[in-house]
Image 1 (cartoon, rainbow, N blue to C red):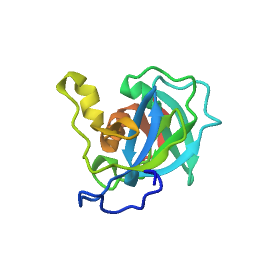
Image 2 (image 1 turned 120 degrees about the horizontal axis):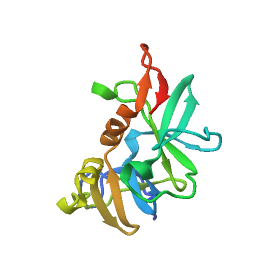
Image 3 (image 1 turned 90 degrees about the vertical axis):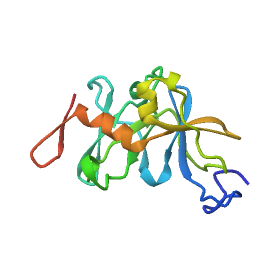
Image 4 (image 1 turned 45 degrees about the vertical axis):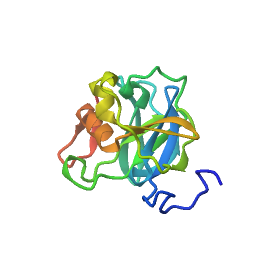
Length: 173
């Protein structure tokens, strides 16, 4: 049974399995915890000119959702063209409350379960930016996966947004 078709629930170690949304960005296999993913959408009509690090905004539920270039944010080489955007669920508290963001991926994401081994932390040599955005490294049958910290990614995106008094996104910078 593949990781994408196994039922959710405890794994063989008795620890609850973590459901991940696995994808490729900048040539690296990455994942977000599935509970932070709101939807995956195709990228087709985005503005031709946007500030560096942003690919544009999508209208979802009468709201503009800014979409960032995840490869740029992680410092990875740019891909020829992102094909999908992962839209995060609105934040539940603190600075993220009610905010929605999206990030690009190079391929169609898949759902997987983290195995009986928890993601290992990044080594100090990875640098402060990577350690802030990557929750850990998972090595399983699919190879090496960088498990990203969705909250840290959203926090890194917030300074690049201009909002009006109501909190609606008005500018990408």
